[in-house]
Image 1 (tube, rainbow, N blue to C red):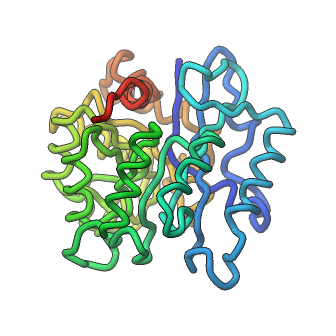
Image 2 (cartoon, helix red, strand yellow):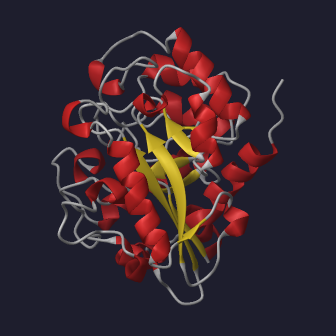
Length: 302
């Protein structure tokens, strides 16, 4: 079975976290193919102050993982069974500076997903956290076009609703790498029914986040709450777009029963117990993400 997790902050966490949620050992599952997206995060200061040079440090951490036996992929077809496959992503448009040509540098090194913004407003866009009603900036629109032409998926997980709507009108739909359903937990980081229906209509992708604050209003969660969000998106018609976006190594709270990447099979067992078919479990585990990335790979831009 193909198992894909579309967001983890492992590269950022490596220098200061004693025990990582995502390790090669925790990804190994005999007879299965595991793909872990690893974010190049711009930091809470947007590459300024203590975060200056952060992307380069994270790339050095990534090279260390490759030397330890991780396998970098640029498409899902390159993923190998019984190894830790890594897909590079970017979280925060500050990584691109003010020059759309900088997109090429990251695309050439294998970045396949990019979020224009994290929680801080930048030169490209406004985050959901800000409450802004403004859309992408002119630079943000130019950067988005350049990313799409380079087959880099646009990630709306931290983007505000206006910016997300603008990207949905682009030639290839954006995705949400680590977001949940706002109807079940009313948090600014979660997606509204309107957004989810739009993504479903566009055959996009939504990776459900494991952070308890996004899963349940109480801020506490279990495996069942992760499944609730998956089931809700399926009930809206999204059984072909929903998947997994754990946010491992970027969260400080965890659902009971889901403390690290090695416990994902327990989630699939609970899904089966709740009546999910094996076909649907395999879609959620990785096939839906693979289908979305194939659409990106084969897209033709005007």
